[in-house]
Length: 516
Image 1 (cartoon, rainbow, N blue to C red):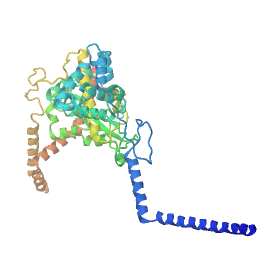
Image 2: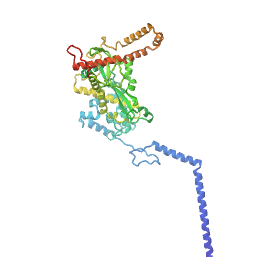
Image 3: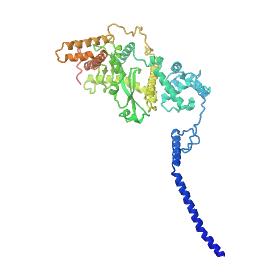
Image 4: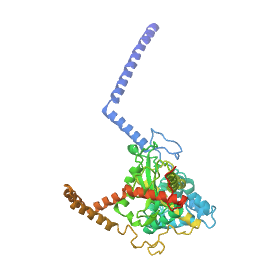
């Protein structure tokens, strides 16, 4: 009986094992069927989409204490309660208090402007935008004081570093620091009171004083300034625009064209051109060329003499890439004679004015040296314009500190100033510009009427059908592109420089300077 029972027990084991195997197969079939069920697939797809969305919209920061789990829900960003009162107290103790830690010289080294200019600037900013006044947030806490925001923006621009670099001292977040920089640069360029002093276009009195300055420093009449282009690196250039902004340096850049005088004051600036354009391409799109064509720059011209010859147009010193225009004075590319070598040495030395201007501008504001970390060209435009405005502020201060004769050189000059009054005495080319243009156009029409050319009538009809303003611009362009006038100006400067250095011979004739 025990044997039968043992056999029965042994016979039940295979049956139980078989039943367990069948149950496991059925369970696997059920899981497989549920796995490929449309509703189950839809739920899994929705979960994956939600996980990827949370991961894309949330990036871990250094402020997260516990890290970031990409499979879990995003954690809330840590809130930092900035001590704005402490920042204001530090600024007053270090820079602006009655007995500051750092004196005026150190303040100028840190922020590139003097304390007096800073105080005036804060007053102007408060009148321009309420952002620079005392504000309160939604919790009735006082926001950063205007002096704190202005100093933070100045320091970020001067040193060209990240917007989060001075969070500990100025007690403000990265977004607030970025907003301070943008607001400051925009105000420097757009505020009428600031613009009318430091970014103003030259007047007739300014042109006369510049001509006198350059005659004292360089020895030649008629010079307005030096023209050149510099390329600024664009670190955050979008990939879609990289092709047109990459120049010969291999990095995305933006072109800056300026005209500077001997004292490094920047009278003209034009920014935003892609780095693939050279100096000629930028010149053809420049606002300075537009002012020469529409006649607005001609209002600054007056009569002057070089080596006994009379000229009526102020000129610029440029390098060899620019075209030979009546207002451009270039060095000789291959100076073989002594007069050519002397002229080239003078021209290249005098043209260092604009090179020094670029060097000092970049030395003061390192944001123009490092790759600019902004995405929009418009924002970079205001940064560059604001840096030029601050640069001109310090140029004026430097001139007043040097105690030269004209310490108010860059102040706005009244039209009644007897020293620099631009009188209507027949010596101004701009006063007669429209009349001369009209006479030239009438003479051209009369020449075509009396011409024996069979196509003269057709040419006259086409010319008379053109708008008068367009014919004025065409006439001014022809005068600007006059190669004979360019050669006459260059030869007169050559002879003047040679005569000042070597004089005339015993018979009063000029020395033969064609010898080597």
